[in-house]
Image 1 (cartoon, one colour):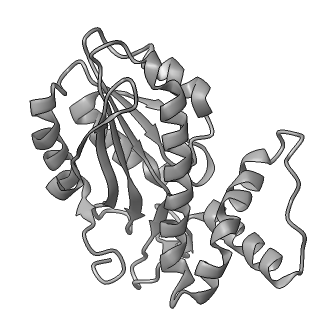
Image 2 (image 1 turned 180 degrees about the horizontal axis):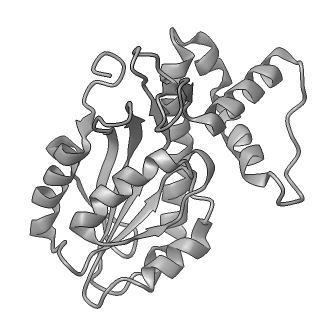
Length: 243
């Protein structure tokens, strides 16, 4: 993990630093936590750990961690923020590292064999490789809900096809590429919905890559974005160096 994702923090380290950094900005019991993390059950640990400090989370995420709840979910969340409070939005893809130090794999509770992590991300990666090689044509915009989210994960990863092809280890690079696509989408959502946050309320964006480790050991989070914004979308402070 230290070799592939330097700067990653254990969940405990992350939350301690979050509290210390955000408290001077008024983040207390009036904070509403929102998350956009993958559906995978291994990602609930971070939500539970965050919840111990910031309360129950509003979930915006879908497959691979993309904020498929969109502007509607952000605006709904904004209307749930306690009076005179602010929101903390935590988002990003995830990747597993198993007990044999294989990136993109994980030891799951109750299963004897290692499994892919993240499955949605790997499915999108395989799609991107096939499009890049000319084996398949790019998918059309999905018209039915049966597997629309996975189609969009692939389409949003497609601009990173060359980057992934040239990577020394595509499994390591995959969540970093996915994060860039998610970060772009999340910031567009926030720009469109920020005014729904009440006057005086702040929007804190914490984006990065969640790193799942074998069952019984701490998970980690690699912070890539840590920003404080007003309810007009204006950047107040780049807090990333404080993590």
